[in-house]
Length: 267
Image (cartoon, rainbow, N blue to C red; front, side):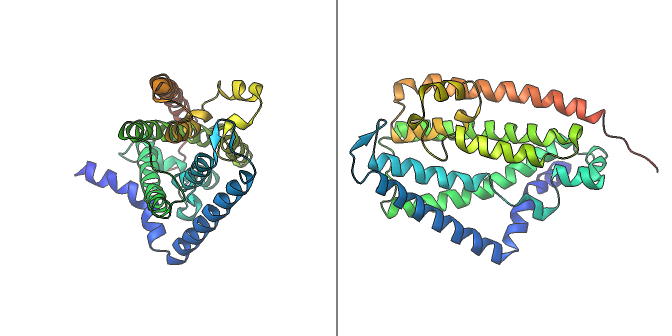
């Protein structure tokens, strides 16, 4: 029974969104406008050229649109639920995370799981519409589709741990607003959201290879559009898995150290 109640934590943000129709309407409108503008932009850029940086027009448009849809999995309004780490640190209610029968790291993971599954529904719905409208290309084979799904799952797992590290920073700094803004920009730039990494200089690509951001988005989408061949998929998946393990161990250590900094005063 306790396990059943624990899983209810995953419904907090999705239920908050579903009970706010204006917010859902705004989300639909924003996603539609972004997809239309991104597709138009990349089609315009390729109007006078054939293949650039190893991508033709259809591949580039597919990559850009999928990157836009992927943002729906990670850009929910978490502040609306008043249950973010920074809000709890500000009001001093973070102590309740450590007084519940449910461990704080498990509660955080369940909340993130619910948010990402809700965002995934938006992304899949947008993908289905774009695929039917011919805006994006389908995967070239079942093998490519399977590898892409696995890589996308690993990439989202890496992204979860990266966001967790920034939230855990609050236990030492109380606020993480500036760090979050820097992270969002770095994530979008170094993961290939703004543009595929192959358009950047070699030194930039090499530098980003030492950071986990490529593993979150660039690798899955590169596999989907064929920029990374299936023969290289194994090595890329191993790199993603290595980042998952490394970040999991690091965040586990931070959870333990964070618990020592939480003080409960009074009765």
